[in-house]
Length: 61
Image 1 (cartoon, helix red, strand yellow):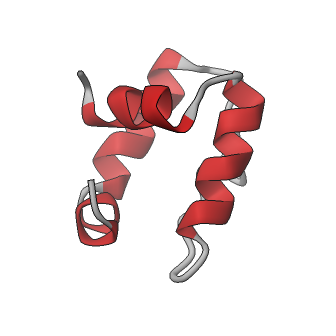
Image 2 (image 1 turned 90 degrees about the vertical axis):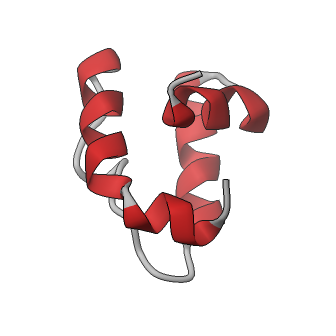
């Protein structure tokens, strides 16, 4: 997944993540241009997942 893919369908992915992990807040899932890695790092910590696991969750694999 590249930055364009993440940004392009982030609203859809954000909804899936909130449904799967109800404890995530809007702030946890806020996509800011240029801060993708920071956001994904925070999600990794909060969910206790590796970067690869997180990408699989986001991609729906």
